[in-house]
Image 1 (cartoon, helix red, strand yellow):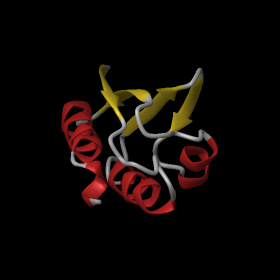
Image 2 (image 1 turned 180 degrees about the horizontal axis):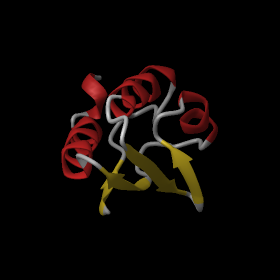
Image 3 (image 1 turned 90 degrees about the vertical axis):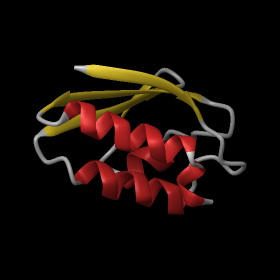
Image 4 (image 1 turned 45 degrees about the horizontal axis):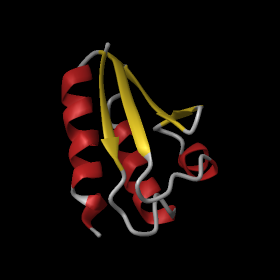
Length: 88
């Protein structure tokens, strides 16, 4: 298991488009569970609706936890998406 804590830089937080980008990237790691820990909630990063329901706003601290096959690759990719603001 590997983890990284990162701050959300998107002005509008994780709305539908970045949540979709995140879920699509996370879903590419079939044998790895990817969880976001934010605001006291544990969210499955492969589920768009869970990401949306977490209400992740700009400036929120998010812990990304990856466990399973290719966990480091998954963490690196997901962390990179957060750092670049999901291309926004």
